[in-house]
Image 1: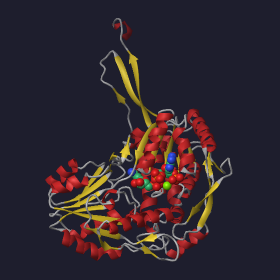
Image 2: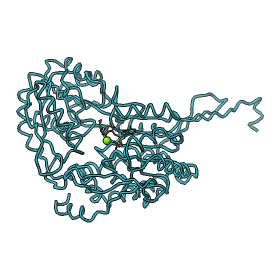
Image 3: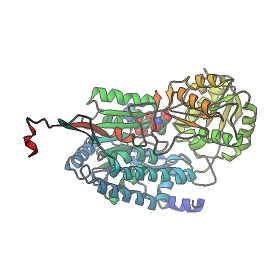
Length: 504
Ligand code: NAP
Ligand code: MG
């Protein structure tokens, strides 16, 4: 970690990437159109960014297809593809402070998280998939001696990833790691609020030796650029992370175009259950607060519902109160702050709207509840509501902000029923000292990841994605992520013989 002054100096000297990255070159949108990207901490314009539309998507797909068919990446020896991706990882590490500052400026995320989490996990993710390349075996089916049936994996071809703004670099890494490892050509569409780190990553990938045309980045609006990707006849798959609402569009786009493979990672309203036998309440409180306030709550796996047993609630609330001071909000470039700015004015308004609804619907405000006036930018206090009931909007809606809703129960069974009482099923955490109960509850909760006695998303080796309306079609992370970017092919070799003569 550097000092605030160091980060400010890096920020002052940054060369902001603003053009699309197609076929190894930065290029303006063909229409010449641009859009404004803002610094959420100040509300000031950072830059004008190329607004790509369907003409740019066509161009990028053509180049990506040519690269794929040429075999320059798709047919490279696995060990060679691995070496190039490892070189990419080294360049990311060399430029980590620059990337962290770019991320903080463009997204409002606190620099200490950009350094310790976003860039570190981005690097670790790409390295994990790179190292897997020459360790994944295909299969031979049990056919008997008359045939050999190979079950082989092949890259899909040209794939696209449409990304959210909450973890711009890391979500790009979750997609490009396995997609490039498998040999695909890729088109990334970052969220309009946060295009820059993705563009810089693509430039570094080229420098590392990933051939031109293999990794392309198209900034632009969802409705134009995103839709053109979703409906393109020559894109073989789309991996999407974002809201459930927009995720549904990609299923429609695929149905109305070429039936491209679609994988969706969508929203969540994740429960954190604390039972009466939870141990080490100081640590539980720390996890509860991290689970909801980390990344300003702009996190799909945020545990925004605390479901707590009545018998332990008073002690837990006292611990939460004690620790709230650790969650200070301020200048994203200043490493002393745990929370930065909300991504945009519109999102700030949405979160403040839920806080107003919580008050109006009769929940009791336990902490926070106000905007922070820093003179500019969009900052919100960490906010906790007690006495929330299941029908309230703050118990059901994915707020995607620093807002915790506390619901009180009297049994583990009641906790599980409440945990499952939303349309989502992304993640859940359970705090209890009874392993048998933890296991039974983990099985009963409909969520893609259930953590026991900690908050988390597993790690790079464990698949991540949602049940119910939190996801569709596949998983990010772990070896399961490779399923998103590969087709399964059966090659059946008939070996039946008339006699043994052919042994001669
Ligand atoms: P979003 O509005 O759904 O946007 C996601 C992406 O889709 C953006 O690139 C967006 O472009 C694009 N898009 C928007 N409308 C589109 C359309 N009509 N056609 C095609 N593409 C379109 O989500 P967000 O606001 O960026 O991110 C917040 C959401 O992401 C939350 O619901 C959160 O839970 C979810 N999320 C899920 C995960 C996970 O792994 N499950 C991880 C992170 C976030 P624009 O940039 O122009 O909007
Ligand atoms: Mg958006």
